[in-house]
Amino acid sequence: MVTLTTSEAADRVGLTVHAVRYYERAGLIPPVPRTAGGRRAFDDEALAWLEYTACLRALGMPVALIRRYVASVTSGSPTGAIDLVMQEHVEALRDRRAQLDRYIEMVERKVAARRSAGR
Image 1: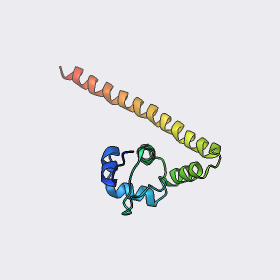
Image 2: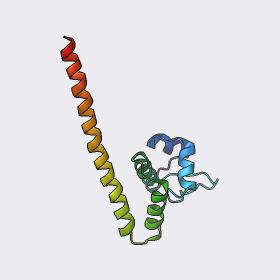
Image 3: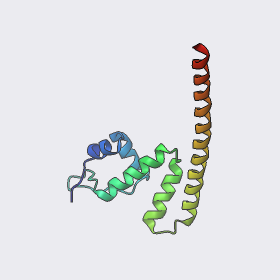
Image 4: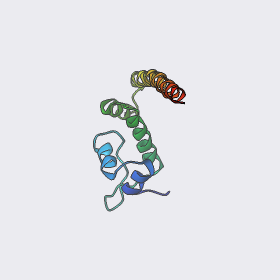
């Protein structure tokens, strides 16, 4: 099995090494396996957690919610309640995306109107 160093994992996911270390310390990803020398060794599972957490953070998911999700999944607890909260966050993101689409269209119409008036 191939493993990645912290730096390699950070590059793969588009984070800084500092962020990767923070994610683990803060409980946003499960503890990462270590080498005999104590260095993090990101296997496929650890990298998948890191990628998913980076995705959730990019979507504005609060740290506390991600921490609760990770704790729930890794402890084997039923995830129904936490999944519901996460789904609500996704729905809020969809609403925000629709709002942004409307605003983008408005700006595009204004730009097109100004171009037409200027000719």
